[in-house]
Length: 276
Image 1 (cartoon, one colour):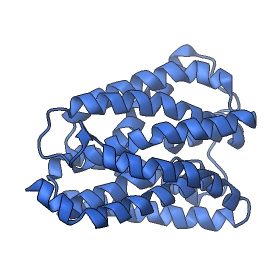
Image 2 (tube, rainbow, N blue to C red):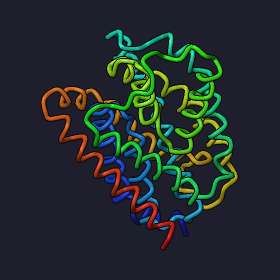
Image 3 (cartoon, helix red, strand yellow):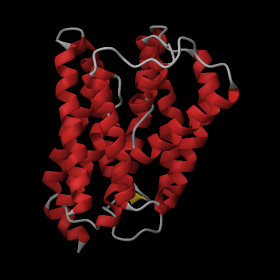
C-alpha cells in the first residue's frame, strides 16, 4: 500500500525535495544556522501528505536531514577553514562531547515518540526565532570557559539536542559560541566543522535504531531515506555559498525577522499537530 502511495505521488515528493534542498542551502549560507532547521519541518509535512504512519514521520524527517548535513558540513568546513574561520581550540574542547551526545541521541531516537520529538524541535525553534528577532546576540561570558566539566556539559547537550532535532551544530552551536565570546565569523565556521561531529554519529545511530521499523518510505535504511538524501544534498552544497554571497548584498536584519516568523509558524503548526 505504501509503495503505491509513494509512486503515485513521487513527482510531488521529488519537487518538494528539490525546493527543500535549495531553501536549506540558502538558509545555511545566509544565517549560518544549518539547513536542518528547514529540512526537518518541510520533510515532515511532505511525509504527512504522503500518508506515512504518524509514529515515524518525525524520525524519518530527522534522520534524512542529518544524513544530508554530512556532505554539507564537509563542503562548508573546507570553505571556512580556507578563510581561517575555524577555532581549532573549540573543536578540541567540544568535538568529543558533541560526537558522544549526538551518538546517544541517534541510538536513543527510537525511544522517543513522534510527539516528543515535535516538542523538542518546536521549543528549540522558538528559541532560535527569538534570537533572530533581537538585534544584539546574547552574551553570558566574556571568556570561553576553561573548565572541562562545563565544556563537556555544554557540548554533550548541543550534540544530544541537535541530533533529536535533525540539525547540525549551527542551530544551537552558533548562538552558544557567540554567547561565550567567540566572534560571529569564527562561531559560524567552527559550528560548520562541529556539524560533522553531530551528523555522522547521529545518522549511524538512527540508521541502526530504525532498521526493523515497518512501513518506511521506499529506499530507506533505518530512519534515513536515500531518495531524500541524494536529491537534497547536492542542492544544499551548491546553494550554501550562494546564500553567503546574498547575505552580503541585502538587509540581514529584515531577513532574520522573516526567517524568525517562518520558524514561529512552523513550530506552531507542529504543536497544533500534537494537540489536534
